[in-house]
Length: 258
Ligand code: ZN
Ligand code: FE
Image (cartoon, rainbow, N blue to C red; front, top):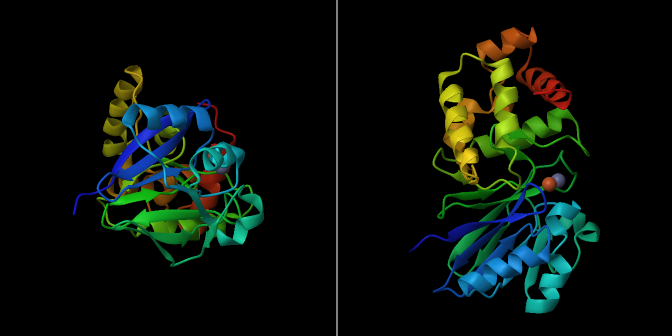
């Protein structure tokens, strides 16, 4: 069975909405439409009619296009059941472990709170695709607006368990600044060094650095690397529990000027 085709739609300043579709199945899902117009233009160019919106969390740069797209296309909006009141136009609420089916494609839901309390991810196992919203970024993670470090560490740990080949479709182009921070606390990580060179070359051409993949994130993302000796030494936390290493890295990123 062919996998979903997944295209980025740059929105606002540094957001990506993603369009995931299978023409044979007649399904086309928009993940986190920040705004309607760039999404509609991408749909027009590809001759696609959207059937669903999948929302990871309630922030305006993820749901801003919901109502206009719903009105234009009569599509079904799927989002976190626990955050129903904050997701405009939501039709279907999903919870941890639910499997939502689009044509032949199955999306498993993870509850991954901390960036927001209701944040979820959609994992298409057979399509090897993960939509983590603003929880996991390429070489980074989201800010803790509605949760604490243990909550975020637990959320990230769920995603880190997915197969290495899983492609990661993050919702922002933050990769370059994330990479600069990562290098500041783990400067001798060889894969991180080469990845940063690749990222700079990609950005110089004006192209998206996404999707990433879980295998590469485990090798380069400081927020998944609490066991790294070098990171522990940099942070002065050689013998601390993983969650404390994570918490200190997140605190430093909040004030990092790179
Ligand atoms: Zn957000
Ligand atoms: Fe966002």
